[in-house]
Amino acid sequence: MNYIVAIKGAHHSKAGVRHVDKLVRGDNIINFKGVTKSYLMGTTRVDALKGIDLKVERGDAIAIMGPSGSGKTTLLSILGCMLTPTEGTVHVCGHSTAAAGPEDLALLRREHVGFVFQSFHLFPTLSATDNVRLALDVRGEPSRRARARSREALAKVGLPHKTSAFPRELSGGEQQRVAIARAIVGNPSIILADEPTAALDGENGQAIMKILAGIAREKERAVLIVTHDPRLLPFADRVIHIEDGRIVREERRGDKLQ
Image (cartoon, rainbow, N blue to C red; front, side):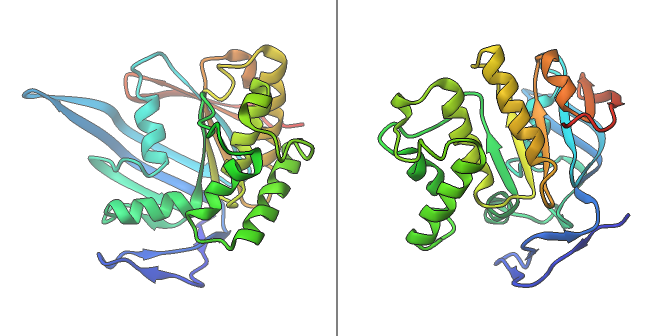
C-alpha cells in the first residue's frame, strides 16, 4: 500500500522543504531505497552502508542484529534523521530527506522519532515527570498540559507511583521506563532503541521489551531495536541481520507480540 500523509498544519522551512505532522494512512513510516553512506578515511572511501533497501511499517517491531562495525549505528542514525545518505533516498512519513538541512532534520526528529538509549540519559536533578516533560518543552507545549501528558506516559510504562521520584531513587529498569515514557510522550511515528536492555538484568530486560512490543501495536507507531541479545528476538516480528554494511538476511517471525 502506498503511504498517504496528512498535510494539515504543514509548513515550509527556509530551504523550501515541506513538513508534515503525522502519518495518518498507509503503511510505510520509513522507506529506504538504495541507501549508501560513505566516509573518507584520508583518501580512501569507506562505505558504512551499501545499497540498503528497507521499509518500516505501522505496527512493526523490528530487531536489527549484526557484529560490531556492520553498519548498525549508521543505519540507526539515518533512520533517526541524524545523518543523510550519500546515495539513495530516504522518506520519513512520506517526507524525503534529500533536500533537508540541519533544521529540517531536527524538525523531523522532533515530530516523528522517539529515541531510547542504553544509558537512559536522565537528568539527575529532575523528577521522572520533569525528565519526560523535556520532550514536550522543546515543542513549546504549555506547562500544565506537558505535565499532564508526562504523567500519562509514565502511567503507560507502569510508573504512575514514581512521577515525583528522582533518577537516584529508581532502579535501572525503572529509569529505562522513564526514558521510554520520554520517547513516547510526543506521540512519535517510530521509536528507535539502541541496545535498550544492555544495562539491565534479564527480568528487567524482558519487562522493557514487553513495553516496547506493546508500543508497536499502538496507533500508527513502529519500534526498531538494535540489539546483540538473542533473548529479545521473540518480541520482534521482523529480524534484520546486517553485515559489512548490507542486509544479508531478514526473518519474518509472524505475530509474536503478545
